[in-house]
Length: 438
Image 1: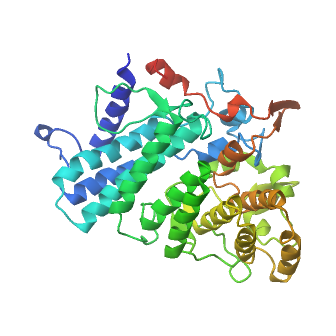
Image 2: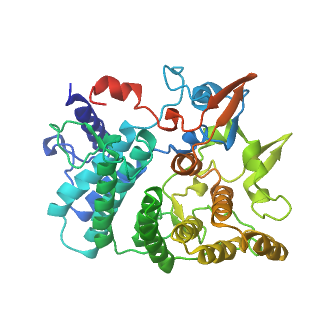
């Protein structure tokens, strides 16, 4: 039984790849990957099966109201009410094995591709992408199913299993949160040493690049509260791409995969079923200055007495990393390191691209006198405003402010209490059934 689940992960991945004529035995007329092009196809499959889960957890946060008349109501009602124990069978599941399926492809490229592909810059780029995608997958897993990173307890907090090779004998046992983060950082460093493409053209920018791995590194260190390392990574990424959309000049959604801000566009972070079954929460609407914040009219559209999202639900909105997040990470790191005036300058320079130009003097007058605590509150709200509905809010609440949230269904209030254990997801029931180690 201990080996059953890792075997299932490998088996699912094996058959998924075989559909594309890879990894099958040669006597059956299939192709065992040998060339750069064939291993690129394997990794492309790894990208393709990477699950799009971030909009699902948005229902656990405070950005959305579930539309009780929507077609997908039964899929999300137990997600919305945090009913993780014995949910309705129709409840949309959180990804688990799907993430390990993606990791399987990366491991195949790392193990076999390193030996079989002829040396070249293209080989290094491919291997770097494999390490980067594996790091991203484990990072997502530990932030879904592990408690938020806390340096004082991470060594004993339970994380998720690490999958670092194609080994059917592996015992798939969760390791500590610290061990997962350590491995994520190891893979990031390996990826940084190999990646040599700074930017892919739109359409291929679902792949990791030198800029994207630095963006991931900045996010990881931000979640770990390693502000100095987060600032270093953010600055290094911004040195490669610091372009922001100025909404005063170009009223265009900044999270488009074709945007100058786009760094990596792997995931649809607000999928159509969530978009079609939700309204925007009063909490989210309330943090915008509707007269002066240029994002409000772009991000949301009126729907009767409610508002709907206008920035997601289609592939053109695929967005894993973009420049705005890096700038906000930079401001957060500067503030936490005690460089408060630098942090204010960073934030105000960013705001020039998001607010009416004539209003900037008012913002400067409000922000410059702020204390450190007041500034951090403003910064987190600006981060929420900017990155709304892009899959960040649930994870930001987990790492910074596990506040009380109330959701209402059919007149009944459901509450997530402050520091509620449900801020961390349990392993999926089918995963626990197949693997008693979870």
